[in-house]
Figure: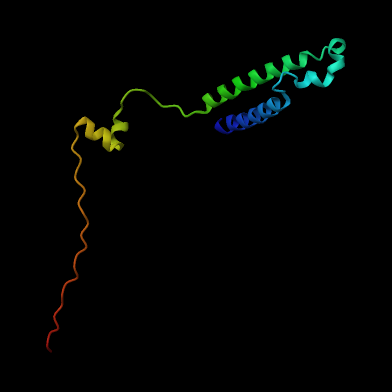
Length: 115
């Protein structure tokens, strides 16, 4: 399921990039390419379609991103969560054993014996 959502997010991102690049920031966009035919063919609707496509793709990207976020099992404090966390164990008052420093042992000194 996670892989499917990741692929859908990538597709929506690419489509959103393309739709934004088609738009003209000064309001011309696709309808400016049909300058003389605006009244005849109704190319003015091109900007409406691109604006709706932009909003739809942006909302889809938001929904897919929220769906792909990892979910927590529960909001209650369970014993499983406190067992692995030293900070939570200290906060709850549990005594943690002190770490013992590792001291290398010195090799035993051998004295030569006379035979």
